Structure formats: structure tokens, C-alpha cells
Image (cartoon, rainbow, N blue to C red; front, side, top):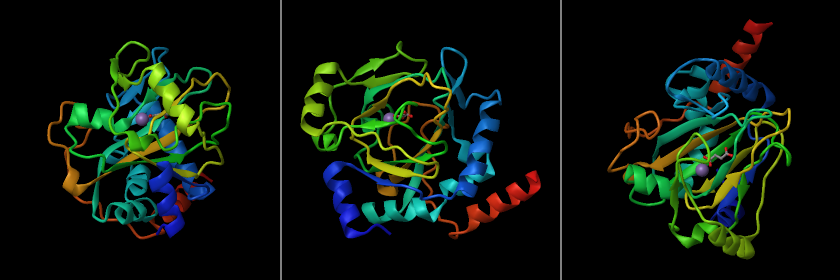
Length: 265
Ligand code: SIN
Ligand code: MN
């Protein structure tokens, strides 16, 4: 459960960073499975223009370790607390930001996409990032504009050319104005860190030209009453199974991670 000051910080700033939420052992299995998924040829693995993996969608539907993360109480409970109701998985993706080739994510708001492309009624879905690698100032950390979530849905353009992935992006004047008001933060730290942020918080990330990959899992948990009304994207990008998530027990992922480590020894 989140403490009162954490709930207040989330509402005021639009994000909350909880370092070291998952153990090294838990993260090791999630990272190793992510790397195996990127090696697969399947439609859910989206590639950069260079051919390097960009993101793997819906891994919680075809990989057991990621299914356990998707049902983890450390993830589900704080969001149920903030929304005051049960949640379902709107989207699950593992962003690679590969060494040397990981491409930019332009400045955007996620709820803009969920509203325009998926028909989501309200910004009552939460983004939760879990760091699978160390996130450093130099390897393309996620950058957030604090307090920008208070601005509602901003005018955006559908950019289908900058990267391999179409995105509703914000123009430079808009970002400049918001940054003058809120600045930019880029939470960094060890694998296992957890960062949750509001659907309307403006964010983006630079490319990664370092030898250090920056894999982050992003879960989008949506309040069940806020289920999407007009899906236009494939089911594996914007899910239409609105079944409330039932959390596992606290140690389910840990047990799986221990068995995985022992099998590898
Ligand atoms: C996103 O905004 O969906 C991803 C950004 C990132 O992984 O840097
Ligand atoms: Mn985003």
C-alpha cells in the first residue's frame, strides 16, 4: 500500500518512483525471458528501422514469468488503491532501448493515444515501469515533465515517420511551455525500480548510443469501469479482455525466479 505522502506526491507531480521494488533474482528471470522473446520472430515483437527489437507486446499472455509480473500484488495493489476499484491489463510491453541502436520515443502523452485510438473514456489507466536493466542518465532514461498531467489531452500530431512505431506527438512549443513550468526529471537506478505515472503526464526518451541496453517493462492497468469502447488496434496492443486481475500471493514470482535460477545452475 502507498503511504499518504506518496499518494499526495503522485497527485501533485503526476508520478511516483519506488526504487528497488523487485529483487535482483526476480528481475534476472524477467530480463532473461525478455531477451529470449526478442529473439523470436512473432508479430508482437516490434523492431526498430535498424532491425533491433524496439518493444515486445503482450508478453504476459505467452510467457510465464511476465504473467507473474502482470499479476504481482506489488503492482496491482497500489493501483487499486489509487483508483478505488479493480483493474485489468490494457497494454503490456517490454521496451528494449537496445545498446547502440535503441531509438527515440518522441514527447507524448499516453492517454492521448488511448482516447484517440482505443476509445478509452477517462485517463483512469496507469503506466507502471519496471526497470529490467540499470537505467542511467546516459542510456536513454525515460524523461517526465512533472505536473504536466494537469493539462488534459493536448493537441498532438500522428507521427508515422520518425521511428518505426506510430505515435501521437507534441510539438516543440508545447513541450517548451510545459517544461518552463515543471522542468524535466529522469528517474534512474538499479534494475527492480518501479515508476508509476499518470496517463496524461508528458514523457519521452532519447536514443541509446551506449553499449548499455535499457530494458523497461511497461504495464498499463486500466480501471475496469473505464474499459475501452472503440478498439482500432490489434488485440495484442490494446487488450479487450476486461477481466479484473486477481493478484498472486506475494512470493509467486520469487518462487518461479528461484526455480529458474536453480535450473540454470
Ligand atoms: C513509452 O512512452 O511508451 C516508452 C518510452 C520509453 O520506453 O522510453
Ligand atoms: Mn508513452
